[in-house]
Image 1: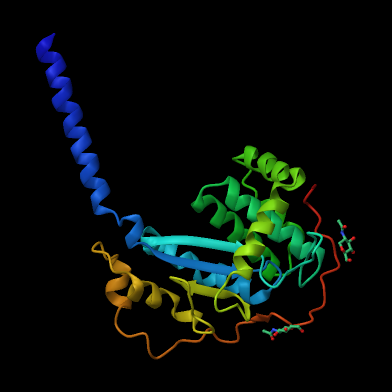
Image 2 (image 1 turned 180 degrees about the vertical axis):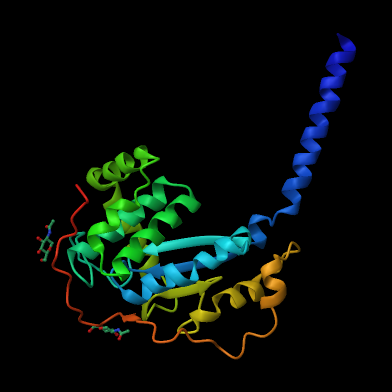
Length: 246
Ligand SMILES: *[C@@H]1O[C@H](CO)[C@@H](O)[C@H](O)[C@H]1NC(C)=O
Ligand SMILES: *[C@@H]1O[C@H](CO)[C@@H](O)[C@H](O)[C@H]1NC(C)=O
């Protein structure tokens, strides 16, 4: 009895120390680089950045050194009575809110996959098909999303994102607006991974950075990216997206 319980203690100590070791190999929270994307759902440049650029950090492991934040609000305006007016009309507000709910409900990987899927349909002009992005394997996500939207939680999340966006210093001038450790990259967002690697001061340098660290110049501006400026008066999207039943 005594020997088996001491064996148990040794065993637990082994597990504890090996898991402590595993944790110490990962970047600590303070070593992480913060990457934030301020965006709105019906701005083409935002879709392009989400669909073509951001998936790279999930593929090459950079996500492991990031405190990654998506802020779906963009150039919307908050009226005194709490009403949000989106640059491209109510359907942009709808998708901003749905994506805010996804970020709140799902894991980071799941919500990014969902948002990438929705933004891809929007960019292709197939807004009606975007509801198919809800994974049929996880029907509880659909219910939770609908509940978030209809309960007013989504609206509260949007008000939080309104505050975060308004607090930007310097203020954003257009979207997509990308910051690395709170410093905006302006239109040099094609180099965003190089900025991440440059900002990373930790010891567990991801493989991706070993090739990217070499020189941020020359810039690789993303050809013809459609930025949406704060004061653009853009035509609002009038057609209501079908397929979403809330
Ligand atoms: C808020 O104000 C706007 C503009 O004055 C108005 O159109 C809207 O109905 C108001 N909303 C609420 C909830 O009072
Ligand atoms: C947008 O318009 C407002 C009011 O017309 C002005 O105060 C602000 O400076 C403009 N912002 C930009 C980025 O041009």
